[in-house]
Image (tube, rainbow, N blue to C red; front, side, top):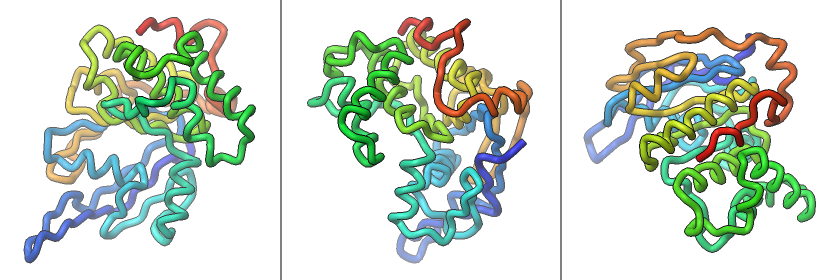
Length: 255
């Protein structure tokens, strides 16, 4: 199985005056294409810094990182930004939707830098909203949507660029239990369709829905547990972009 993420001997050190804070300590991690990995740990464990490293938002102090076969350690900031925009879709706890834009415009926003024309961007954004069961809400602003609906729009935005990796930071944290469970079911379904997902959480009940759970403490991996097997390679080859199957659609999960 090919790797989506290859982290080797990653360290991250922050300097505060004469003090050095070691956040990640010689951490190595490999994530296969098509996997669904939950990274769990308490506050201060280093999981947020690890997420930022995987998301190309933080540059490690030392070590190497390859994303979908592309070595990143010698890239400029502009090259990292280009790779991030091309390869990674982000799902955040607080949705991060622009309040003055409607749902369709929020989903379309990342596509502005893709080279697509306005008509193509709008059509693709609408397809993503329809995929998430939000096609009828395209012209509603975030304030007119429930928390679950806003997270669906945020997921549609993350999928709009056809990313290789979905990186979800506490995606259910701002939702009530029922809505959070429904969004989690949606994330599970997206993984079944072939999307590689890394989910950051402090909640073991959320983590237990992943295929693989990695526990981190003091900047190091302390446990790595496989809960479900990787999808077979045939299903991964069939996945070239986010799609729905005739049997089960994400939009069937009502949020």
